[in-house]
Length: 529
Image (cartoon, rainbow, N blue to C red):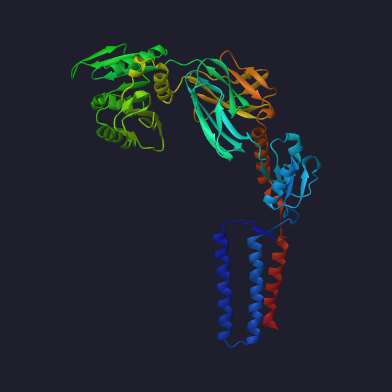
């Protein structure tokens, strides 16, 4: 029999009261013994007091007993599931009873669901039951997956997933060239696939395991927002010129400040108030104006053309409270690149690129990056422009400054399942937002006046327009069956926790109260007899 306690105050306070009452009562019995009361009467007094104390504990601890019919779990499985799979899980979980979900008639209040696809209607009878969920062993079954439903052109897309593999060494990848792939182990595998987005508008990317397409990722790529960069250097170099040209060709706004002497600078198109990212050499850190600019969190900083990385990392850590730390490494990199004989140690709050030779740390509202590359411009001279763009596109994609206007929605979004969408606008936020034929009412964020959120329940599946610069895709549950089912079951488990008290049968408080009164009466009558 399973017993729990529904305490009205902390268990420490209750046990302190019970122990004090017990000590006081036993001390009074000891006092009666010293007065010469007979042993028989002492035993009667002890019995009466212990009885009173036991019923007092019963009233304070409020024990409750689990309903006997909940002590045995039932396996409830998806329609059409193979018998071998059902028997495997019955043996693994030590269960005796199993029933198909269509034949379930509340044989138990504690069930274990087995299957990858359950509809909301099928799960409705389980809303007040204690439920666990297991997935069948199916190759390529996706349990969890998420990616950005909206992002800017050139921004880094990140796909996190959990997928089952029945065979080792299967390759899990995306159906676009030059992207990451993972070699899976047998069983469940978790991982992340990242790639820089290209093109603009609606995007569809196949998700591939071995030679099979599991599903298709769908998201929307908005136009890139030009950012403002400034190169602030003691002397120009081939490395800085190549990087400035690369940024201009991407449509970014680039200005330059070259230090001619201690007090004179050559400046092109300077607008310090709107700068978002500065690219400097280490000598510029000695300027008080630049230190103040960074400490005020005006935007982000990238250091290149580094000669002494040990001294530089110590200076940056001291000035800005960062935690850059070096370790020895070889100088040769892929594509014939060379770097200083160090790499950055992996630290929390930092992102590392190119075999840990470029690191970026989030320090408050700003980002600070340091590159250990000797030079990267030879890639352009050798015709390896794609490799060059992959390096610096990923680095500066991770240093995205705040936009005056943006949207955030996580995919996948399912028809009939509520999801949250966030809008950010420094000018004005609308009261509602139309997505296809649906209307999304927005609630302003009480902390951030430029942000609003809304809960959207898609009524249809497929692509739906949400203004001129966004389309949203609503998936059918069958495209990611385990993911959509997981969302339904998560809601079920929340409802079960809300009704957890109903699953226990509490011992009547009248038992404790009547018991205390009976023994108190006995303690009052005993001296008179």
